Length: 252
Image (tube, rainbow, N blue to C red; front, side, top):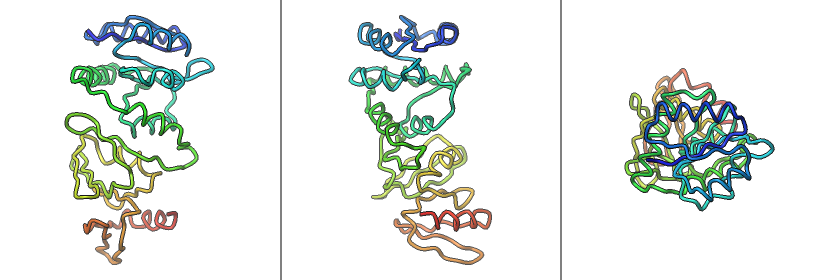
């Protein structure tokens, strides 16, 4: 049984999530709830749960204040938030699970299942450290994030964004092409990564291709235009994305 606590400053939200977990996540046992940063840190340090459902905005503090205190604890975290703002990108970069309010049952089940798998395999990584670093980089001020977490076989690996050359769609999967001839097939669509990386120097140049502008060596004009990248690959530049690419090129 996985021991979990819920941290949220709204009583109804705590009780509703507790009900959903009890009803749909039988492997999870709620052992406590907290409504403030101080209550949360005391509860987590005392009860030592395996999993924390952590609201982002807690009264006058935040879930990140809680993380700053418990960051050395070996605990899984699933964020709960009603606000789909810039912090969501930091979660995705850091491969951190989060749920938007109102909580979707299937998303809750998926997130808790992933947490259970990481706990079972004792997969504790520095994802929370990377999250705090990414949050401290003001994304809303268009500063670049440094690393991205990729869910690969056996866990999550973090890579500097400058090492990512391009991404290519493979149906509902995406292949990452990195420097040193490294490739990773990720079970997410290119559209998801396009939305995530569009402010980080990556541009969509084709329905199936997203490239890091810093790795573009040459732009070959013409009806069948294409780009040559630092790894020697040729990526087609489709007519539908050509104008967007040229505008993007002038920004970087």
